Length: 385
Image 1 (cartoon, rainbow, N blue to C red):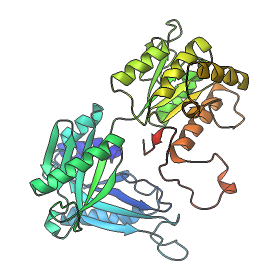
Image 2 (image 1 turned 45 degrees about the vertical axis):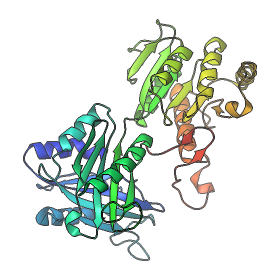
Image 3 (image 1 turned 30 degrees about the vertical axis):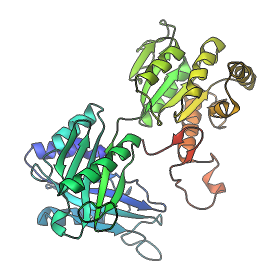
Image 4 (image 1 turned 30 degrees about the horizontal axis):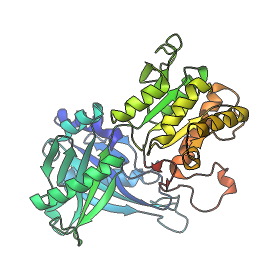
């Protein structure tokens, strides 16, 4: 839903209405994750996607029906027949799509939600997508740092959903939650989709070199807020790193420790150390590898550099468990030569680490193409960016 919020706000501010179709749940090899959304305007315009093209036509027709009736609809799409050439998912996956009307009357909190997203303020939108009482479907609760807005229907339900939504928001996850009809923790009768809009995760690139410029570009492409940091002011300039959100002149280990203390890093944060100079690398990696919940810590350098760096890190007192979190030499084996190619190999390893991928060619593997979020000892739980 994140991608269509601006268009939804523009539609509502213009006094118009739109139907919004949101993927709330996926199974197997569904092409788009939970939270993917498509907006259909009253003039027939379309923004966004729920399936990459597989069922867009059917969803478009359903959205037009919802625009006419004003009644929200929850529907499931899977493979339609043995050959999957009719309306359905040719990939073999299954997804649940909730279609509702966005208007100033149905979503009066939309402007504040968009404002929070634009200002990188965490906010979650909880929507009733299924209920024993059809009149309750479509009710909404917005959960943010300033409290809650709107209502699911009762104080009890609001409290339960708000508590769970805060947990999902903290990890940047979206999910369907099940309650009793009045928000009871046990029981069934109400399903609520929580769409989390957490600030984009951060990528910290240390070392103001040409490889850093290429890695910064890849990071932005993947949806990270990129900071480039180097202690050398002559190299660390915004002009050299136009893709980065920030370019910071500071000793890398001091900056990383400061950002951690300020609560600016979380379990989605990626650290790329590209300096391959012991006076920068070793103090920085000593700090990074002792932090409990970074998603990825990688360092550039030859195998000789890696061996020397590892010996120096052991001498600082780092344990083997802490050292095992270090991806070094950084990147997957793609045969990369140029800074741009190297940046792709680094991005590929970050993606593989996040989702538990192997880096092997897909043609050499069997089973599902898409991996679920993974959890291991090297950086916590990885969910969608």
